[in-house]
Length: 553
Image (tube, rainbow, N blue to C red; front, side):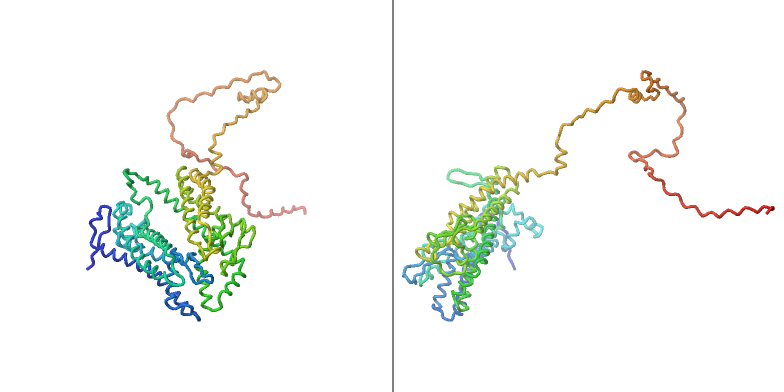
């Protein structure tokens, strides 16, 4: 016998929780721990596979497990410290492969979405995401209106409670892994572990939003918010503008990163020989080459972010005192041998570097397209564009900071783009180009152009009256106006005779109607042909008989 529970509604009180909440909390705790275990286990499986296949491993099984924990924490923002160096000085390593960071983020996102969907709707994450679709009520029987389900604060509090339990399970295993990874020649820097908390909180928040059905600003409970002694009302239109700004910024970030990936791929192709030579020099064994290939693939998103920062004009650094930008590349140090670093441009400037400045222009035009097509009012368009520029700058600054970091001491302590410059450049390009573009597109949408014929026809032009030339006052002209033709050219002074009145017919009885009905109004008789049809051919006539002969002959 299965017991089903009703979904949490706005009228439900948080104090009167159903008995199933204890099981849901335990399930959320297990979901967080499972997400952490799967991420750590996946990385450990790859590391152990490479350790087993290595012909001369320089660490034991415990060292391989330490490396697995270090990589898992590095992917979430924690920094590493390498003590086994030639100089004896500790060497920090904080460049996180962004592709490796996608694995724990996706696992935590899916785990939180499933737990929140099961708590607030009694369904999985996919069904909860479909709840925001306008056709969901037609596809699922008995489904309630999303606007009614998201008006109460109980639903938000329930989602926040479940998200907290998911984070508790995830961070518990993360704390155990951090304690385990504090020893060894490569260990985690303790001061950088709070970044793991920020990483997990961001991924879990996105998962909770997805588990609630991905509600928009129009479905959020934005009735009143208390701050201090006052109560403030948040206008729902401002929330819609914020949502539109975030969507436009997300599209612009995708354009920037995608364009950066294309620029990075073009750089790798242009330096294909140096990249292949560096890859062959790093390791001769198959396991070593596979390891280098995996690290290079994990750093491909970092290459895309660095190339996008290069296209913004701020560039990036490959060591303290160096700069790689469209204006020129200078200050190169003795770089480590790595395939991606072999694709760096040569010192000096080139036309190819300046041509990359078209990428931020394209991203800004994308923001203008997203904002201008919504046909907001003028000031709303300005606010949405300004908010999109700020969101774009903040988002790209986070990506730039996450993709860079130190690779060693001294001159190797500065690798990657400077996040504050990259974010400011992204916001500046957007404000300068997207704001007038959005206003122009908004005017184009609000006032669609008409065809030129209707446009000219709609103009009220003054009618030009051209005076017609008058005919000379001749006798023929006077006769034409009077309707008589009796006057002659010999005596132009002779007046035409008056018209003879016709006699009126005598009154008679009404006659019978004509045999043929009158023609229908609006129908003209068929015109006569210009040339008559040809006559039919006559039959051939017989030859006349010969005349009779006279008797005299």
